[in-house]
Image 1 (cartoon, rainbow, N blue to C red):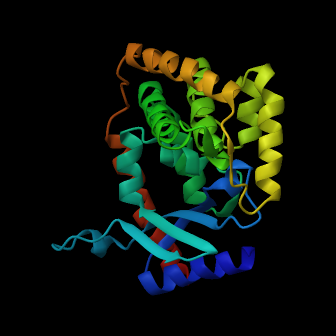
Image 2 (cartoon, one colour):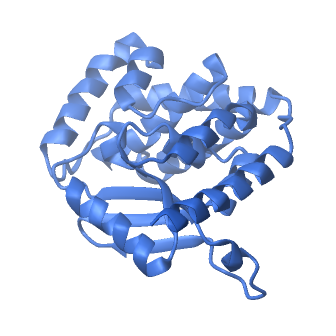
Length: 259
């Protein structure tokens, strides 16, 4: 699959006339609890040629390249990625911390050194708590639930706890989060559920797990209160990001001229 993904990245560059600066796995395979039939969620950041950014007509800042039972491939323009970094969108921080990297470049290694000052504790907390609350209300309130949905509440809750305690972006691997912030009395329950998910294509439905529901009922409101008490984040401003954007275009031009 690695070679197929590399071929797809090359195909994107050739057909869309862009340079892929960074490409990673972003779904359950990156989180560390993929099922046997999990697809590959490939996300990438790309940059266009200078003239493409100077056109009067709007150029799309998203490339949605492939979506089927095996591959889910899409990417953001560097301009969009930097604009979202300014807003402390947690997704770009997650991509940067993915343990599964399909493509990196010297430019991306340079740019990632500037990420930290743009991370907002308040924005990060709201992002993960919104995700956790929505999944919890939608999937885990009945007597019988889709068991795999517990992970789509657990992971954002643990990420929010990590942010509240450590005031930095959370790790991507679920096991690191669980070992660091999950209460000890819940770890065996979660470990057994994770084993079941990873060994079975569809773990199906089962009785809801009272211990986990009680944990969510307690910790989500606590973390929401903490988020509301956080001050608004002050960023370094646009100028460092403007320089990164121009440097990205130059990187593409230099790479293209070397071919």
